[in-house]
Length: 137
Image 1 (cartoon, rainbow, N blue to C red):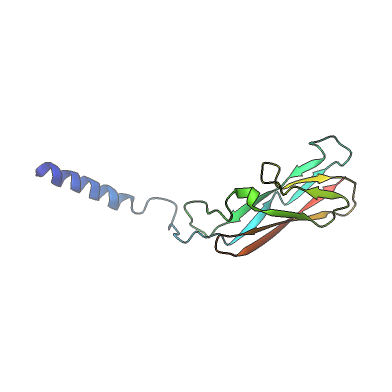
Image 2 (image 1 turned 120 degrees about the vertical axis):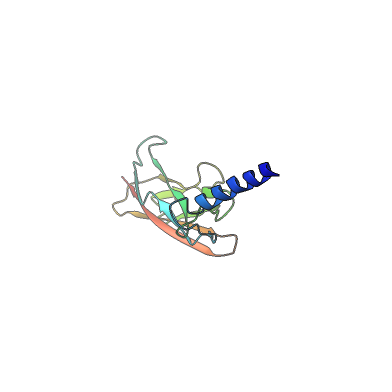
C-alpha cells in the first residue's frame, strides 16, 4: 500500500513539474492556415543539361503559432500541390505525384522572372495558393 502511494506521489510530482515544460502554450488547433513556396526565388540555365536546367520548389504548410506537430494540407506532402507557371513558352513545371513534383524546367531564356504558383486544398476544403519566381537564363 505504501509502495502504491509512493509511486502515485512520484508520478503526480513529475506531471506537475512538467506541466510547464516546452517553449510555450501548445496549440491544439493545428489546422493549416495557408501554404508557402520555398525557396522564394530560383534560377536555372535553359542551355544546360538536366538537371542544371531545372529548379526544385517545395510547398510548405503554414501553421498557427504553438503547434506541436505538422499538419498535412493534402496527403502526399509536396505532391499534394498543383503547380503552374505564368509563362509556358519559357518554362514548364511538374505535377507528377513523385519526387519531381514542383520541379520547374527552363526551356528558353527569359528576361522577365516567371511566376511559379502552388495551389493546395486542405482536407477541410480550403484552397490555398502561394507564389515564387523563376529566372530562366
